[in-house]
Each structure stands twice: as structure tokens, then as C-alpha cells.
Image (cartoon, rainbow, N blue to C red; front, side, top):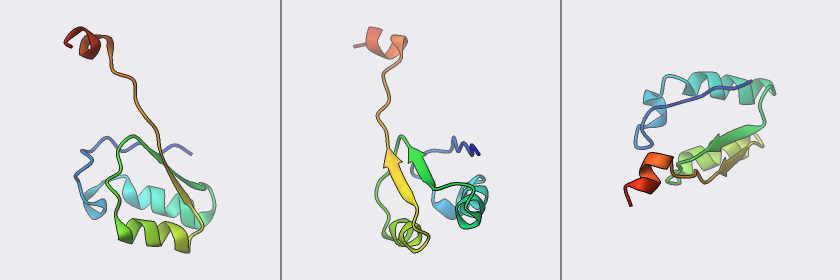
Length: 71
């Protein structure tokens, strides 16, 4: 199951429209964790993931062609 959240990284979890779907997927066992490109580290999320034996993995993104050209 893919639940893609495109809100800004600074948006609190409770204000993210896709967070309830992600929670449900983890609780029901349809998902084992969260993959993200931005994570600031939130103790409450870390605790929740630990309680549900779920993971969080942060991946790096590659700059776009336009971003590389602007450098």
C-alpha cells in the first residue's frame, strides 16, 4: 500500500491528510513502516512506531536537472 503525503515537512502529523491512512496501514499490518525524504525527529512519532514495531527510513533525494543547473 502506498500512502503518499506531499505536505511540507514542518506540518504536524495531526494536520497531515494522509497520516490516518498511514496509521491504519501500520496498525492493521498492511504496512511495516514509513519511508520519507524529510524527518526532523519527533519523540512522539518514534514512540508510536516503537509501540507498533514499525520502522521509519529516511532516504536522500537527488537534485533535479533544474536544481543542478542553478548551482
